[in-house]
Image 1 (cartoon, rainbow, N blue to C red):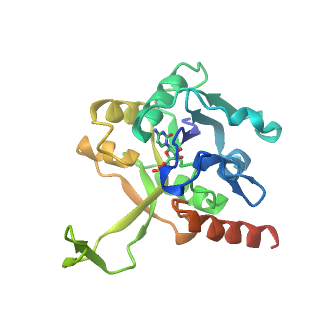
Image 2 (spheres, helix red, strand yellow):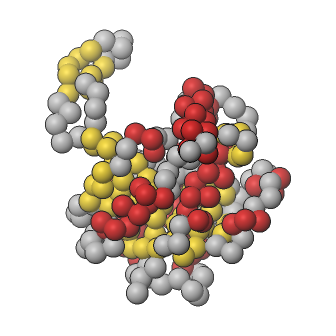
Length: 234
Ligand code: C5P
């Protein structure tokens, strides 16, 4: 039986947050941001192991205690220049682990999506465990979409019909994802599914919700904090 292994690329600098500290370590509900996604992934009984991919020169990880995750957690200092490079390097280091097989499923999840829930994770795994290709959590686009000219004036309105916003986790077999990421120009893609699409395959979209948003700008932190605190008090 194939197993489900999570991989969190966490080697980014988070330049859009205007903060010296990399985004994954910003304080959120009293913990570094990455703690929240780690907690969800490590507490899922369906996830066999969780790999965290850090920048080779990461100085922050060691400042925190991670004992509650220790039995599932594997930390690797092999992040690359782009997200895709970090994921590919992480997959290569996973492959070197004798307990992990080519046909195991890998769930790649951004450290910057702290509000992932166990039920979203279960939904993803339930839908995709029998899928030929794999896929990702996503939500249909809700807003009207405008294409801008260089002067920030509307050139046209784009149809939102059939458009979805990609989230993570994105779930593919280890062998297929390594093959796909090894063939693309890592500077041109922003998610894992794009590499699979470039092979001519069609990843499945699994309906998620807006709570699983990516913390990108400073104001996103307050929203994520509210969501996490509300859950804690339930
Ligand atoms: O910057 P962005 O929000 O798109 O990053 C998404 C995820 O990819 C984050 O968890 C970030 O740490 C990770 N990343 C990485 N290596 C890079 C760039 C981003 O692991 N070189």
